[in-house]
Image (tube, rainbow, N blue to C red; front, side, top):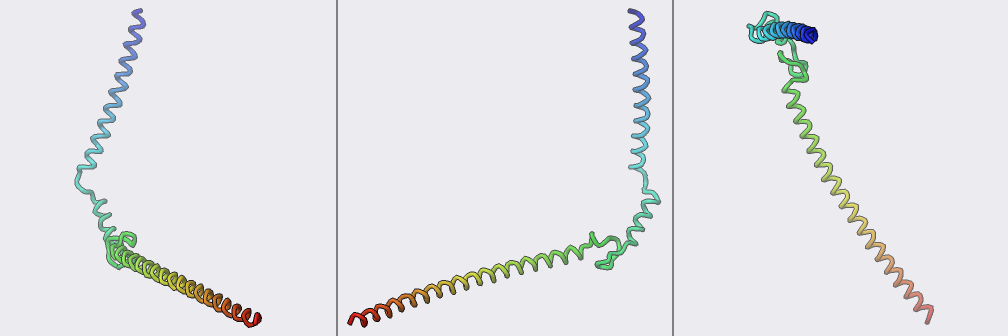
Length: 133
């Protein structure tokens, strides 16, 4: 029984030693990360800023951004999309007007056909009257 307790004690000591080593390495990494985030800007980041200012937009010609981030292009796209919407509305109104015209024409054709039918009926009636005489 005493041997089992000694083995458990050794395992516990080994586990404890392993745990402390891991915690120390974690603390070192955490400290390094904190220093990196809270340090002064490096020369490399200032070079990146200078490089960014050298980038020229092909849309507006100004420096500091690329075409996909150009505010001029975004404004231009908004204008064209509003024009497209206006054209769609206008074309919808034209379509509605054309449909109304077609309906009116169909109504007129129906009335004309009805009048012709009544006229033919009258003519046929007169012919029958003459034949009976």
